[in-house]
Length: 395
Image 1: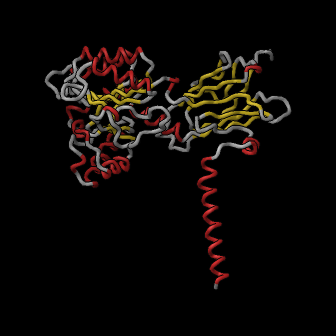
Image 2: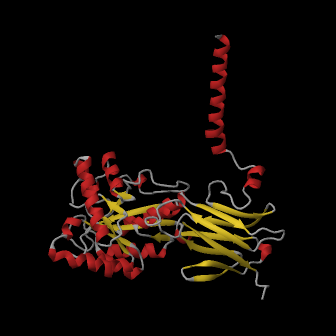
Image 3: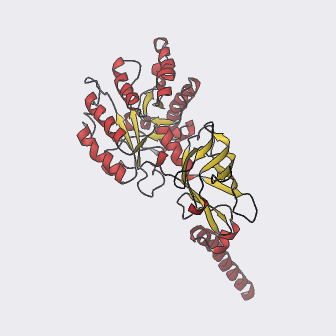
């Protein structure tokens, strides 16, 4: 019996050691020389989204996925809870954003668009807004507090809102809770189950404004994203009050969401003067922001977090000039289809002047390399690409 007990005790100890090694050691240790030899094509360096192509242990080039599109210091989503198309005053804000070349999003309360007199609004959105960078977000089938509903009632509202947006060709991905609801877990779960990839709420805690600051990779809650409440009944009545928040966002290399109501409409809730909105846009345009639609920024973050790049060189004794790369994230390509900004840096001695890529990226096959660097915008859709490095001495 003692022998059997000892055997069981040692079995438990060995099992515990095995768990520690699998779940602890392998998950947190740094790469060793044997690791690099086992992964000759590419490896993830210190979880910084950097992938390295090597030949005989020497770096040939590296690919870094930038935190924000185009390598911007910060990201900003301008959202507008206003029934666009019902009153001409609500076009003031979208026209201003388009004039500045900035992105913006407006609400879809689907029940309000089912009246026959409002059917043309959806068509106008497809023609006037979407091609000009103004997106849409779900805002419920009815404009109600979804936290006050049961899980089933909230789900039915979210799902109907999602399905109608899809039917109307409005690409439903992002959502915004009416009345800043969405604080309850059951509401958030219902929203996710309905098909949205993120949902925006609101906060009056300034410390919560700055999403993905520094090395933080994703928001705390995808389905209750905090936003800055703009306007007279909100926290930020004018540009002077907003500017420090925008500067702080850049300092933290973070993402901030702005929630506006009643821009240029004094009789509406949370009135925000049009001239102040114009000043907001001018500042955003001037500074180093990625102005993105709410759903695009959310998709970009999730794609980058799931990113995996495989780099395979053509074999031979000489330094390879041809490579196969696969950029993938394992996500649904119909939903997560935002291009990631990838920066390629080449070994200086190779004197790479241009890179040929097949299949083409945005119909372009030849990309000039400036001072050993090349920036690409690539969707991580599991496609295989051929890269040929040209030093300019082959002609």
